Image (cartoon, rainbow, N blue to C red; front, top):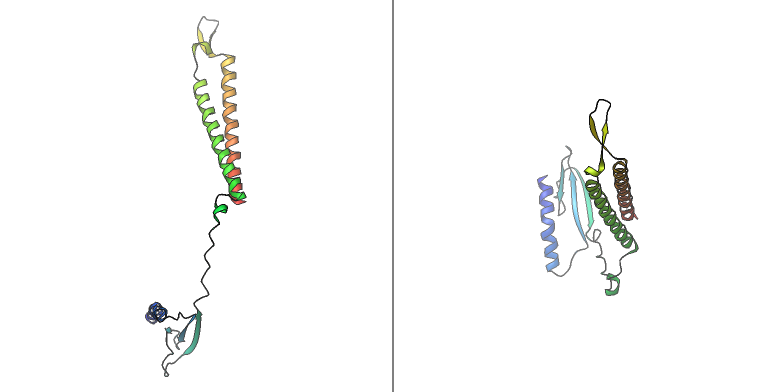
Length: 169
């Protein structure tokens, strides 16, 4: 393992020296030696003549893993968003509007469900006692506000799904 580390440690200085000399190598040769016990040793030069085991020559192409940098867009192209970017931006804007409507519906429900004296009717019983009960108008108002919250929650969920779908496209 130490020989592997030494061989790999020698590789950058060798490449640097070749770069300073003005000729950057396009390949590097290593030798892999596997002895009778299975121990693997790497050499950056041809192994000595008396080396026992299987010797394998390895040619490494140093240009193989180079990727070309993407070209920058032209000045006019930078201002134009892609079709998928436009679709996602529109979906995110719709989501923001749906979330605002949901917040407004929840606030209206909180404010509208507070029961006032006008929303209370007194119910009497045979023995002369009376108890407060909500009016039908109050029940209908709270029911409408709850339905508005449920509809706004459904709109938010649809908008979230549209944002996820726009991100996939």
